[in-house]
Length: 541
Ligand code: NAP
Image 1 (cartoon, rainbow, N blue to C red):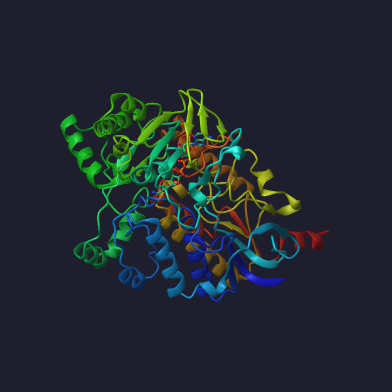
Image 2: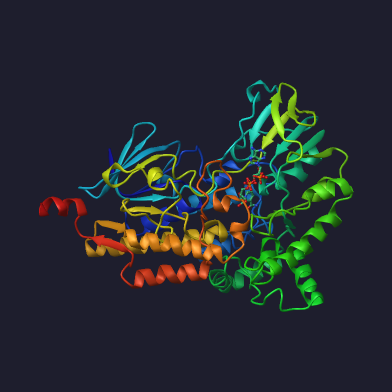
């Protein structure tokens, strides 16, 4: 049994950041990580073409200006290998590895009410007793895969994009199928199309996408950003989503067509994901959204030669960005190649695997390899896998059976001293997640510092506060178009999952102000105790 001040679960961007900060406070802290390497999703999503769709300068830690100055990004949108190199560089530069246990899966965590401690058990039988348990387990880290009839009889290879093998995967001479056209499927399509003998993309829902406008980072741009990095970070902190450029505060409906076209054209060629911020109301008003969606549909049409294929690829069943759009590098153009076929599985659903390939209601697609780019059980998938038991042995998965209930996305009543980093109910995937990670880990660290200074041993969310927060998260979501589409933002990605809005859509800046005022008010919505509630009860009875 190992006794610690804090245990962090997950060695991705969040876990490393939490380790750096908590260790810096002199706490005895460790990280456990189920994989055999650090990096979280960036360790596993090694599929061809994987890259970040937030600009590298913004998708990076801000806690060390030395790190900011010395690291040299090679491209505006970094590839997965470059991001993984960055993560490993950070781990080495700040000597983080010595406190990380790899190949260590948290199987259960039980709250000991009398001691105000968590007892964490790993799959190998190791036990940790800790005051604080920080869950840094990711929002898109529990891959989900279909289970078609006949899958085991398929004679080719099946790979999931989010569990990409560490060995070289070759496509030369192969007939490859990709199922799924979210960001992962759209990113890998043009790369695999160039290498494979034939590529079939199985599409259920056509997705909006904006070109990445990727480019090498010139020495001049690198120097320019580094000279004004602090201002860029401030801008990100004060923006709705944590991206490093100024959003337009105008309404898309307050300008004439020519002006709007000019703004969209410029954003389309330079801003990638930030296209959605061209006007402030793109995600708030359907008529405003229609202007952006119509512009993007025109652009998609221009990129595809065959009118029949084009008609299938143009998204029409949801508002732009109500589902997560992609930022692509040649996705639509890939369908102009002779060796790429689009299989519309809404029209002709997949029926089963056969030894030679995938049978749809139309025909057998003969394949040597099938890639599942079918996404994740988002937001709650990883958090609810282990048995996390709070007061009275209540399982977190039972408490959240009808959807996650949190105060500020950071904790939940009945599970004291449990801290969720970038959890449901926080801006999470509606933000540049790096900004959210740093903000929340620092907020937790300040809270722990205060608790230690004041002799606090138990920190617990109040039931009323979490009810009010869940209601607020829902109210904010209702102001947007997010609930008008079925997506992983609202639980539609997994059959039977509660259909509730998961992230907080009120924006990074608002959220930061809420966190700050919570702290200023002595952590309103939380009860901070000098003795465990259970121990007090015992004394009183
Ligand atoms: P995703 O967006 O959830 O897309 C999954 C795709 O698989 C969808 O097209 C879905 O169709 C399809 N699908 C799922 N189950 C299926 C089934 N049983 N049969 C047929 N089709 C099925 O997943 P993702 O592409 O992995 O991306 C997830 C998120 O990860 C992204 O939105 C993004 O936040 C993040 N990501 C980021 C980057 C980046 O930074 N550039 C790259 C990759 C991923 P339906 O839509 O019809 O359900």
